Amino acid sequence: MEDTGSGLDYGTRPDRLFGDIVSADRFFVRSHVDTPVIDADSWSLYIQGDGARQPVSLTYEDLRTGFPLTSIVRTIECAGNRRVQFGREVGQAFEGTQWGRTAIGTAEWTGVRLRDVLEVAGIATDACEVVPESLDAIRARRPLPLAKALADDTIVAWAMNGEELPPDHGFPARLVVSGWLGAASIKWLGRIDVATHHVEVPWNTIDYVMIGPGYPAEGDQARGPAITEPALSSLVELPWPAHLCHGPQIIRGRAFAGEARVTAVDYQIDDHAWQRATITSSGEPGLWARWQFRWDARPGEHVLRVRASDDRGRIQPDSTPWNQLGYMHESVLAHPISVTASP
Ligand SMILES: Nc1nc2c(c(=O)[nH]1)N[C@H]1C(S)=C(S)[C@@H](COP(=O)(O)O)O[C@H]1N2
Ligand SMILES: [Mo]
Image (tube, rainbow, N blue to C red):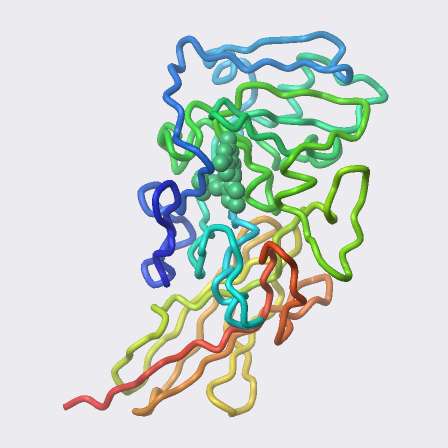
């Protein structure tokens, strides 16, 4: 269940995380179709649309040398992360990539602000959405409201952890849309449309939308509201199930709140009282926080529960309302841990 990725998808094992950043070779991959082979020297990024004052094309060189550089450490999480746990919770297997806890990662992304790139074309006063489009076979698009596109930490990235973007992560350039669902961070960027109207595409009408009772559809074609931020969640840096030796140890993990900030992480072992974990790196909007606590593990079978809270007053619930595609699982997980006595 841990390395649920198969074929084009690959998951990051939560028990192999070190530091804030996940190395590129362990970073989860979610690609709907094969990684395109793109030659950076002949690649261009086109900016166009009725919301752009003039169409522009930028070469790889233009992009790398023509704008102020920015580097941000940001977490990307797939909206379908924990879909397997969600299915167990509601007693149904969801369709879609069978992610356990592994479709989340953090990297240092380097590139230029999308805002700076759009300004070359000029943004019309009545522009309202920005629609990036990819060069892989599905020509993936996920419209962004103008304000999100212009945010300081919405970037066109060409480097990941200080190295050229790896092909599977979007070479030569991808978007990084901080604090939003992974699907908004379009890889293999080829074109950006600036639109003066609301744009409906599969990724905001059919996929990456919440379908079900309690999720009224918006717009003409949409089957439910489009997902923007991922769910508030926490992650324990142990295999599932975990096996530990008895005695004192440090249990570590992460918590992520999308565009909000994680303010507290609490944990419960078996049916003991909830206690507060120590946040060791507080994160920031768009970046996971790290936490830990000390546990004197006694031999036997245990269950660890962890719940994060954020600065919007949200707290992880015990259950998640059903939605058809199994997105946005936010429930507190019951992590099984068996502790063995040393010989
Ligand atoms: N062009 C393109 N961009 C894409 C995708 C894709 O299939 N094609 N997958 C999206 C999804 S669903 C996620 S979760 C993230 C994953 O980014 P990663 O593979 O670098 O982890 O990329 C997004 N960008
Ligand atoms: Mo995703």
